[in-house]
Image 1 (tube, rainbow, N blue to C red):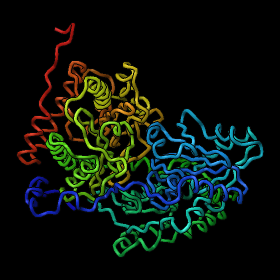
Image 2 (cartoon, rainbow, N blue to C red; image 1 turned 120 degrees about the vertical axis):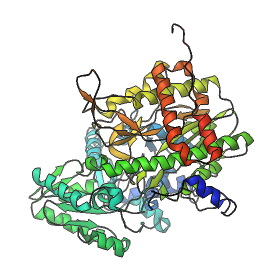
Image 3 (cartoon, rainbow, N blue to C red; image 1 turned 90 degrees about the vertical axis):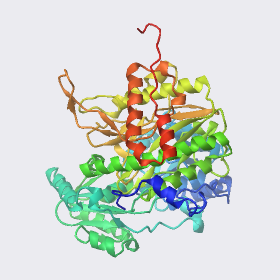
Image 4 (cartoon, one colour; image 1 turned 45 degrees about the vertical axis):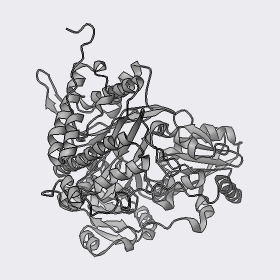
Length: 640
């Protein structure tokens, strides 16, 4: 739906007042139901161990992934949640005959123990514990560890195999998944979301050009074909979208692109309607997924040199290995071009954030009014935010389950509110809301931390430390070849100096009406890929006090083209802040900010007021004026 020329959202809302249904009775993109009961974890693990005895394995790896290596999964692939009860977007369970462990990263150290039976699963943090070491302690020499080749990347399995070899423990590939056997008829069916062509007006480049450019790359590098296994890459390459994964406009598919000739797309044919068929007709042959194994065998037999991403499942590498040809482990050739947004996608991102910013400002104004009255809860607030985004008449989906956490729930980094955990917003607490939207012209992701009533001095000081880190990233200037790992300390320095830190990355890449988490760009301790103009990345430092409150401030940034610095000797890149939403000034301790930091905050708020103000009605515009009022500098000791 074209946004240009549409009436501002507040006018639509005013026209609908008194006519629309009650605010929360619209169907929501997000479910708030607590995870289903049924068999408890103990029964499932016991049945899984029966399968393990039948398969003659002593341990089983259960990762959070699918054959497409997606982060977010369709229900039929949520095997980790089925076995453990853990619903995070990353993790690995290992079930041995008499013990079990769940490995999670720093985002989930509070969530995992709350969801998982810790009498069955030991909770371990990635980086502080390694699966190979755990297995080495639990198993005897000669033991076998089972894994499903379609669910693991080769580099991970190579490293694990090397660790286990020292203990004389072997890895055993399984022909079928024992978790699926235990799940049985209760396992959801694979998704069949319709494939939708993504218009050139939003994609910015025809699929024919993208395909030709990739084929030129293959020829230049002496490769006969590339096997594409990652749905975001395939959707970007063919200018298609789908609905196979909640909140991610993805069509699950595989593809083979030869250096010369027509590509082949492997996808459930029931997803291809007349419009999609016409769109794809000149781009690729369409085949059922069952034909993929035969095509890989044909490439192998013909002695072709085939490129496969290191992140693709072991299964693909094994199917191609051993013939006359060669398997080249090289980065998915779509990854970098997809990350470098073109001019149309950049224009769309700005429009999407302006639209989204107006909805967020209306939401924050509503929240301030309702919080004074009291009685609102995490679910009600989350639903209200989605409703306001819907009123833009451009919302296609939310980009992930909204993190709506009040008080201690805000300290759970990836908290998902349910009817079982829902709590009211209370005076004297902080409320953290991390949310995003999917629009045809862009994907958004924004976090704000809001004071409900009067915050404590500690809350204000720690919020300001997080804000200092946020500003340090937003104002960074950096040369070509600067990596995310180089910038990550900028966000942490103020916290480090106070003896504090946060256990997640500072920022992740974001797609263009695609996945809200996109690589290879990131700002994190492990982010080794240089940032390039056109990439979009989040800026979201935080602080979390377990059992009390959480703080996170997140904007999306666009990497700008390098420019000469006045008086400098080289061109430097910088960031353009895309997100247009006020930061809660009630939580800012002005004397803790330098004049430069305070200047950035006041200039950012002036920009938000200028761009978003005309999109609002009188009441919300008055709130915005107050929320973005410049904060005066406070004199510090020693200052003149």
